[in-house]
Amino acid sequence: MNTRMRRAAVAVAATAMAASLAACGSAKESGDPAKETGAKKGDDLKIGLLLPENQTARYEKFDKPLIEKKISELTNGKAELVYANAKQDATTQTQQIDTMITNQVDALIVDAVDSKAIAGGVKKAKDQGIPVVAFDRLAEGPIDAYTSFDNEEVGHVQGKALLEALGDKAKDGQIVMMNGAITDPNAALFKKGALAELKGKVNIGKSYDTKEWKPENANANMEAAISALGKDKIIGVYSANDGMAGGIITALKAGGFSKLPPVTGQDAELAGVQRIVAGEQFMSVYKPYAPEAAAAAEMAVALARGEKVDSIAKEKTDSPTNKGIPSVLVPVVSLTKDNIKDTVIKDGVYTVAEICTPKYKAACDKLGLK
Image 1 (cartoon, one colour):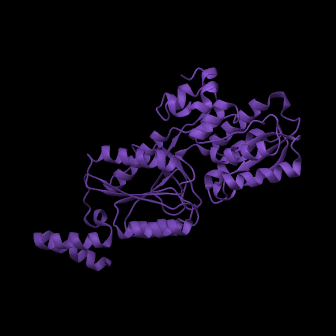
Image 2 (cartoon, helix red, strand yellow):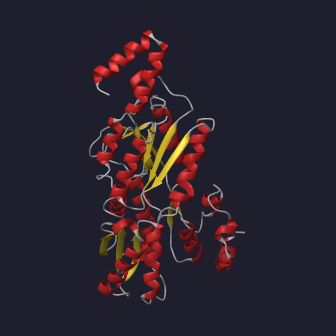
Image 3 (cartoon, helix red, strand yellow):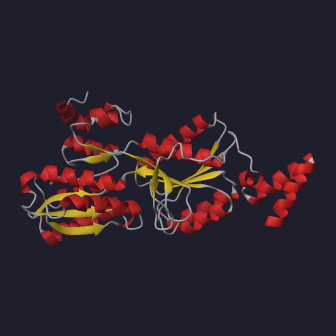
């Protein structure tokens, strides 16, 4: 609908109820009813949610249900969540945005597979009057709000933990850095934070940017590092997340390490927590998913209603294409065997029974997890 037609629709709406209803129908077809009429919406909303992949357990297990629950709470159970997962395919995610536009969602929450590639889709949604909240990863394009964790701080936490594990042997050999995918802007921030802690304090023998964050790619990279450096030279591994840590540890075991070097992680995945209990993985980064999901839901609902997010988002973040994006950044915690009870168990992420399966029962008993 062009500008002249919109003005005509509004003028007719002012003089005749029937024409008003027709104009509302036309505005809905344009994809931007709130902006067409200037009216704020209530609880009857349609919120789109696009998550990037299902290799990492958090997206399907935590993020989707938490966001869905919060949206329901905020809208008295009247809102509809329209969900799709891109399964690590940026082209698929762009197509999913098109589908969300066709479905006339009132707001869109997007966790980008590729932060640059998604910019065109974000602009297309905005052009149709659909506000976009960037979730967990800072998408490029004209996004309206952003929530994530302090991702550079994640790297600092990981780097500090690895130095703690190495102690006075930090320069006795070399470490391997297994960074995340270059298509994920968070991966660059994790690496930046980690390097700020590690540079000059350890010798970095090999560093990899792991394609698609896949554990099998991390496994292959680790095998290559062992072959290049020699198993006697590797004293620690910086792994950017738990999924990759699993692939790394499998490679270390196959490589003949009699004692595993300390390996970092992130996301507090169940398998990662169990490896920490067993002494195979030194740490993970616990990121409380509930507050991040709540912030995304709150901002999406507010924007869908035509409201501002200033009362929710107290910080500002710059992307390569946008400045001063209203943001909610959630603090993170270093998760080790010493605080499992006070973090993931206390917060109800996992039960003791889920962690302490028969395979890990003896190790759990030693840590007092009962």
